Length: 278
Image 1 (tube, helix red, strand yellow):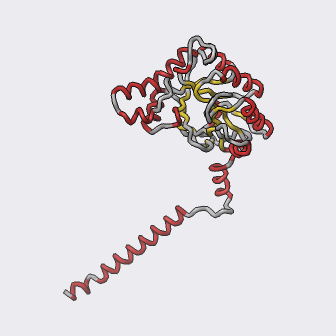
Image 2 (spheres, rainbow, N blue to C red):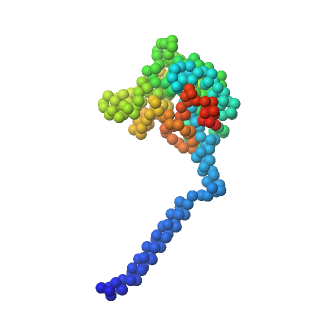
Image 3 (spheres, rainbow, N blue to C red):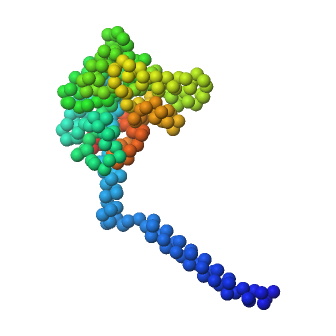
């Protein structure tokens, strides 16, 4: 037995040597491949700038009503002060379709920019937002749910007023039919809930296209709530992008399908608004 062991010593030694060399090379090459660049490396500085630089990111501001009730409704003068802040700070307001067309490209917008959006479709969009957007020459995107639109009304938004908004610089896009919580509907998993989700996503797009006579490109989730299956349904419905209420800016070199929006509330101070847009 001892003789057999002695005869195998050269073989065992060779195995240990080969294994040790392999482990050494593996550790060496892994270390070389994954070694992070040092802080004074120019490439590292460029990567940091691409990921977090303000010139490479675009906040999408989200408003709701004007001179209405609730925490998400601002008075007209407060909204005017927000628009004036952007102008005085030299921050450009980019059209949402223009911003989306830039996604995934390395080109910057040419300065700090934001995009402006509104949800739901109140009458104040026609009576107050449209004149204000024209005064500042700021493009705005309005996401409406179709149950909130009437054929004839004095104090509500109508299809005729929506067409005027869309032609006047306030681009109209989809926000479902009834403003239902799609995540809750999806969790029910019944034939009725699946049919309703289809209507909220697919049918709302077709209704808006019929009444406005244009292609609807974007969809905003009610309450900002979504999941992966809902996003996939929006893709199949033909929406180019969808929008949540997740906080944070959108990096222009990341071609994301679901984009973030900064919710603006009534009690936000001017300092907070400035922090968001700068």
